[in-house]
Image 1 (tube, rainbow, N blue to C red):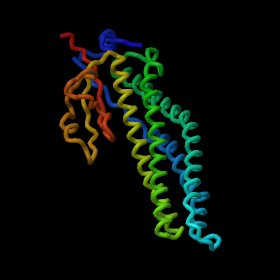
Image 2: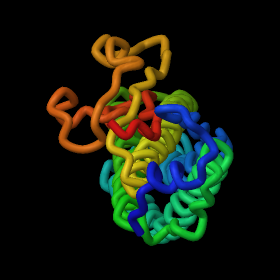
Image 3: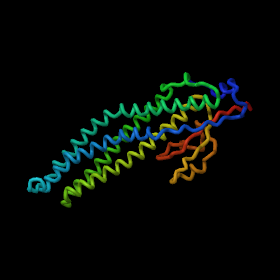
Image 4: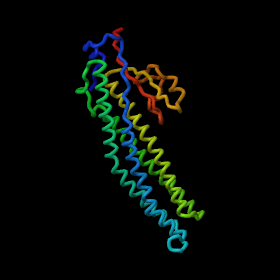
Amino acid sequence: MQFDLATMTKRAGKTRRPEIVLPEIVMPRTLAVRLDLIYVRVLRMWSEGAKNKLLPDYAASLGFRDGMVRDDAADLQRDLETIAAEIAALIASLEGAVTGWAEAVEAYHRRRWGQIVLTRTGVDIDVLMGPQDVAETLGDVIARNVALIKDVSAQAQGRISDIVFRGLTARTRPREVAKQINEAVGLGRDRSRRIAADQLTKLATELDRARATQAELTEFIWRHSEKLHFRPVHKARNGNRYKYRGDPRLAGDFPGQLPYCGCRAQAFIDLDDE
């Protein structure tokens, strides 16, 4: 539901200032952790599959289990395919968990947005908002994260496969191969944490824009993330004002949109009649 927050604020008569700058909504880190734990389930299955299926057959292929050297790559390939099939089934079931995460983020954001607006303007907008207003945004985020989970799994599979078959060629001892697989899963864990934090930021910034434009606010203030590794162009935009829609200066580069961008769009209500 669209509503004109500026007009409603004027009618409430709580302020005579020409504009009200609204504080940013800070999302709790626990929501990033919750998403990361969904990604972890896939990596944990790769780790367990390697330990219980892949490594025993790898050891057997080099004669460490029964003393017979077979160099049988076919068994290892079947193991990888079996683990991958099991994980594909898991990923299909994880869409519900990702949906629950996205809904929790939206509910937190909507509650904080309503509180901020009420505190700063005296206008209660809770009854004017609902999750249905951002259903398309949530759908896009859910689909994006399911795709990212598949990518994290595929990357883990590729690394593990490479380790195993290189080990087979070089006749690397199973203990060393197991160590390398653990390191590969660890790399996946590091990446999943970064993805989860980035996806929370992305959803928050998309909700910032959706809720502001729902309230018929047209411009925002660019707030830089102050990250150590930043894009100079984003740093230069800090404090400048841009349009939520159709601003040619942004060329599709909205706050939080690019990979690992932590910038945010700070909403403000223009009460100037001129």
